[in-house]
Length: 63
Image (cartoon, rainbow, N blue to C red; front, side, top):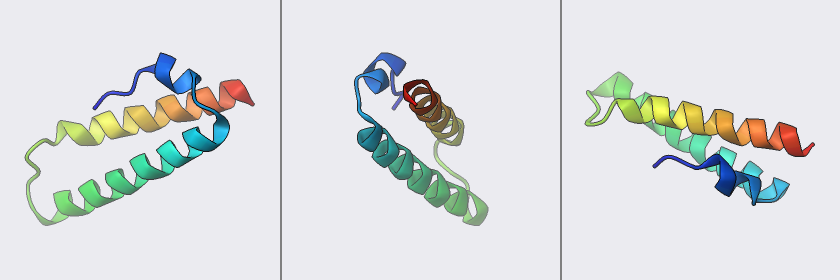
């Protein structure tokens, strides 16, 4: 699921940090699964990394 930057900009700092934590946890789980077996959707790893970057960018803008 792609997160739109406009949606992220409407969130406050606490919500953004929570979102980042959830995305990082999901990325960790997928990386672990990818090491054990083949993923059904390996492009999901890339999507998660990009979404984490979007959240970090918005957090930096708000600071």
